[in-house]
Image (cartoon, rainbow, N blue to C red):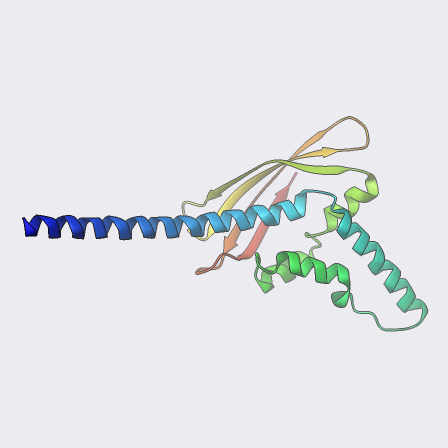
Amino acid sequence: MKQIVRILLSSLKYFAVSALLISISGCSSDKREDGLSYVLKQIYQGPDLTLVELSDEMMEEIEIAAKDEVEYTLESSEFFTSLEKRYENYVTVGCYEKIISQRIPYKHHLSMAEMGYVMNIVDIEINKNVKSPNIYDFIVKITLSPKKDENIDLKVKGSAQFENDGNRITFLRLLED
């Protein structure tokens, strides 16, 4: 009888540890998907009027600095400080430097605001790549609405590579329509 109880207890411990490991690994995957979803929403949901306003303020500061012949660094502007804070928990420094150099975090927001368009994300599909545990493929379905009452449907496909032992994106590939 004691041997049966020991076997049952060891089986329960095994199942408890297995369940814990499964839930931990599931959380990691969910955390990656949540982070990727956040980044995609930051890029494609907008225009973000706060970013547009900060960009306008930065342009005014640049003009004043040029007029007064004072040095002005873009990186110290509230515009770029705000962008860095938005992404710092979701992308590595190297990834951020690459996407910021390509204007990815803000180019759509500024152009959509200028043209009077609105970008709405309809759906985001994220799938873990079967060949690599650190790569996630995605499709973002977007509706672009001009001031008129017509909608344009767009699709962005891409992939994100994550740190080996973390949840931040190291590389982001976007293939826009």
